Length: 499
Image (cartoon, rainbow, N blue to C red; front, top):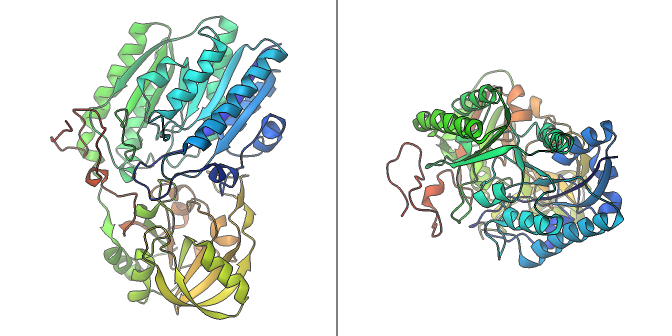
């Protein structure tokens, strides 16, 4: 019987985010399962939307014996601390060693993100893969699923045999990506061969709003990727958009292709690189200020809510989910029928629970990460323990535990969902667990850049991406990078280069 080890370690690291990512962020990660050890991994991950769930489903359907390792996820924030990185990597490697003692392994599947930075390893996934490869040796097939925001590097390609990124942003195909990686791993095992691989780095990057695969130009790039993937001898065409907040030389967009021959892999990689380069000017998508966004939202008279996306405080990009610029603007302009989620403020949530439903209290709301809270008079409308199950396209089946939470009214027409742990607003359940039906609101403000579109765009009369103060800056080129590779253009269509 074929025997395959399965494990994972996911984090997206913002080099300039206000808070590091520590061990406890993996123990209590919000809208994803907590750290899993070998004994609990399979039962916990099967019903979720994570890539490992797809890999597990394919393996079990094919009669594979699974050797579970360890799995961990934390919401994007600053670099992973030395302690957290070493503990989680040690769990994976130790379980892998135990699995090898228990019997021969035929392959390894790992669920990684691809944009993790740690205190000691800027290219953290390459270090995880290096340690795994050191244990299993050069011949055992290793397949990996990646988030397409991976800063894919030559070292990651070298230490693995196939890297399979998701195809969508919002990420609604995490399970299919895990399933594809497992299918390719089984193919390598059964055919007794590995594909040739080619790697290309692109010389420009694009901010997060320009990476959405639901709109051009990225939708067109992904259609071309799919077309090239149907070529003779091609196993996988992996395009990673990059996460432009990681200060190390491997930051940026990259392609890794896999095929029967190196000539085939090279041809596909070069073809996709040329196609993306031709689209470069189209990636420079605009955003508006919070003041302009709120003004426009209040003027809309269409069916369904206007969605305001607070892109620069996106918890999915390294924001803490607690800045108050957009909220202050909603109050200043006397917006009506508006609700914002989530405001990550454990102290405010605790105060609401202490006061009780129906109470009116004074709060210094948010601003814990940037020292700029907003003083509000809050009516506590509803309280919750913050535990619910996600229902949207990205996270369906995932457990959420945001700790003590509250729905408060801070102005006649403005309400706020306050939580104790951060989570990106990519799921309508983040409103419904406190009795708010998003489709019935006039304005829905979300802490997100793009992921919200999967569950909220279908109900929206209009979507407006706005900028208010926050670390996930819409134009990453303004950040104080010091370690990027020479020759990289930080704005699409801009001829200025690093170095």
